[in-house]
Structure formats: structure tokens, C-alpha cells
Image 1 (tube, rainbow, N blue to C red):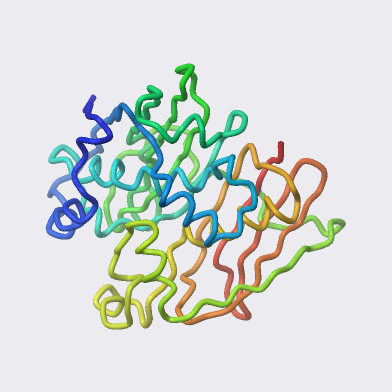
Image 2 (image 1 turned 135 degrees about the horizontal axis):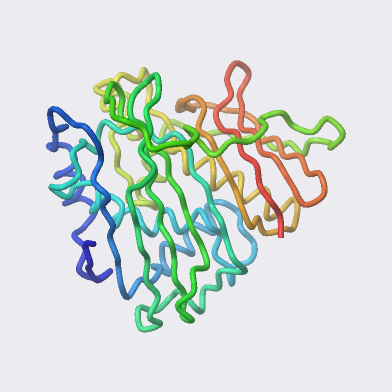
Length: 295
């Protein structure tokens, strides 16, 4: 296990530079079981307040689960740039994300490094697919009482890499993509200008070149910049909070196709009892599918 303090982590820009120059190791047969423990973890309240305003969350006493993805990007990139990890982070494709939450996540419990909160992040569940190696990064968040109150599972693809799969693992958390026809849709429009990726990068710290400009996106095979997948997840969570007045206890989201900038589309939400579904789509493409369990 790699152990460090939250305040001892390098800056995101330092890690991005390291990630851009890292290359895949040859003759890869499996991924190492890497684990990172980060102590004295706390959220940045300036970033948190900007996030809440940007995505329309109305209750600033509770932390939406997707915000914790932003808050742990440095930790995740730190893990992926360790010498023991054999893949280049720059070549990974983010396939999906899952949130499993135990109770409300309160700002007063997560805004101070003296509270004793910590996270444990692990690379797990390697499996083979037609497109390459798929694996998960699981992050567990431990609150003031030392019990796990949130788990985030990110699923990534390393193209053209083949390894032996761990047994019995699906490519992604599986769920039915079809909306329940008996539940009316609650639709809202989403329109993003060419600079939306830059603005979100300033908020999140995620300066991946594919999100920033037409020139930098083309270097990585995209015709135009694309918005961050977590941006769409955060938009969907904001709609769930405000339209359904409910906090998801579990959310599973799959990224389907790039949302190019500038662009426009729809966020469609269905609710059936204590379950809900989310679909972000434009005229020709589906960009995000999600399913949530509501508390």
C-alpha cells in the first residue's frame, strides 16, 4: 500500500506533465494490485461552492457524490503515475462511474483536514474485452467515525491491451438502459458553448487537452473539443436533486459517445418508485445513460 497525506500530494499540473510522458510497459500480463491511502482528506470549500453554483444544486449543506470525484482527481492521477502502474494514463478511456452512498454527506464533516477523514483507492477487477483491458479504480471514503460512507468505482479501458481476466466480472455495472414507459419523462435542455470545457477545467482541475480547444482535441483524434463526462454526470445529479427532491443512494452511469462543443441536447429523467433513470442525448446520439436508487 502507498500511504501519503492529502496535503503532501503533488499538484495536478505536475501529475499531468508526468502522465503525458508516461508510456505503456511492454509484455504486460496483468495489473498490479496497487492501493493508495490518503489521510487528512478534506474538500476545498471554494471549489465546492463554485461547483454547487455551476450545476444548480440548492442544498449547500450536503455534498453531491459526483463532487468527490473532482476532489480526488489528484489522488487518482497520483496512483496512475506511480512507476508500478504499467499503463499510460493519457491513453485510458473512461467508460463509466458508479456511486454507492451511505447516508448524507455533510459539508461540516468534510471541510477540515483535522476531522480525521481518509480515503483508500485501489486498482481492481481487471478483465479482458474485445477492445482491450478493462479495470476499475475503487475509492472508499471514511468519515469522522471511521466507517465507509461512500464508494466510487471508475471503470477504464486501455485499448489493444490483452490480459487474463479476473473471473466472473462484467465490463461495467449492468443495468437496463430502457426507460420505464409508464413513468413520464422530465426533460430539460442543455446547451454548451465552445468554452464550456475550459471553464469546467478551471473548476475541476482536469485540463485534459481533448476538452480545451479544437486544436488540442484534434491531436488526440477528436474533430472538436468534447465536454468532460463527469460534467454530464454532475448536470444529471443536479436535475435529480432539484426535480425529484431526492438524494440518490446509488448511481451507475455509462458514457456512450462524446458530447462535442459547441453542442446542445436533452437531459431526460424518469422515476418509478424509488428508482430513476437518466439519459443525456442529442438528435443523433446518446451521450450518457444512468440509473439511480433514491433515498
